[in-house]
Length: 610
Image (tube, rainbow, N blue to C red; front, side, top):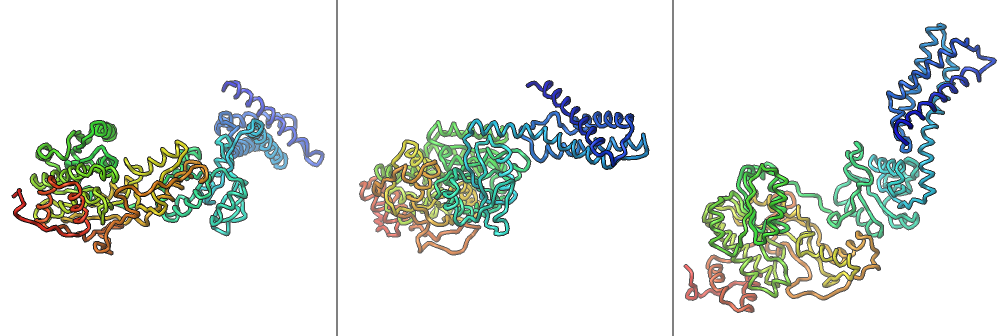
């Protein structure tokens, strides 16, 4: 139906309703009511018809989509009808100096009932049509009967084509339990979610408590995920209220949401003073952590970002992304270089004179480095030495090394090389004007080579999901969280510190796999978890700090400094001198021993470097 035809139909319908209301309002009350003269009745009818159409146009009664009618549309009808009756009362007062209150009140009621009924019948017809079509809607449980939950329920009730039907609320406020919101009952609290899901044949859960702190939210999300039912959270409450988004824009619960830690808030002023208007160099800029550091740093408006990486495609991608994001406000300089190339890197630092270097370039895959130990040594040790000494030589004020929890008591070559890299910068910090620091964190969710992409791929293929050991645990954090810690550490460094994030409790890899299976829409018994055995160099659990290194006081919320002591300068010089000529076994034993606080017997006669 065209807009013109629709408006004409509504205009004619309203005219009939108005005249019918006048007729019944004036004549249904006789004989007790003194009827006005024909002249007054005709004048009242004309006045009411004209006033109605004017106010109907004013309040959009001919432009609204009545199949979606709700409280707002009813309010518009009420205003239009009431003001029309007030106009008629004025006309009667002018003509007769008398107002028939009873007749006008009855006319008002009939007018309101018939206009409202005619409009809402569109909504009823639409709902009936959807039911006849057998629309396949998901039975939805809403957790939280506050403002957010009320908005969700209203949108679901008013929009059945969304594919969801609000079945019930859960809320821990006992005063609300047993009540109804938009016809949806509040049936209980959140402690027995699984029972409510089973009893009510729930297909979907929506968590609508945006004010809940992250730790409590994590517990609630975990309960919901454990039911095996798809769980979503609402967008920002202000976006729902203003209509920017709807319930169809809900967000799936992600594995990151189950970490349950409140976000570390940065010292924005301290970071801004270090980065704004400066030249910042990031090695490994195309990697998961390096590229996120680039994104985070760009928000502080540095003068220049130097993106150093070995892989041209990854550097191309982050360069293109940043150019689109900063729109010419920051000078983006892509540099293809290998940190193992000492002369090349020295020339880069000399040319661009960075104010801060974030060194994220590293080999980090434990089993791969066990199979290729010399590559781990060349990249993680000698590559770090090149970058760190270039910073010292050219007076770079700040240097931050991205390290790992695998550097603590490592049984593998990857962790040992990262601990040795920490020792390199700790020794340089003793004499250099550059402020060196290292930052340790655990596994990064979604980073390249991490377990999450592997699990997702295996689930997509139908399983099995391979876990090395049922008791294996790891610390986890998100990529933005890790990158923010690296940036914050640069402002806290005084020289030689190893900064560590309080990462909460370690997570069982088996539990992680189960959560991913459920979040992917499968039940536990639909995707097999297969245990493959611990791989070469892996530990059953990781540590962020050795007990001997631990300090209890934070230097910044959720950040503390480890008392990781370096080896002596003579030991460091000796090992660096001997490493290239060591056998693989001797190299592993030496580096792992040093990382586990063993000393090296130095023979000065064997030193070939000054």
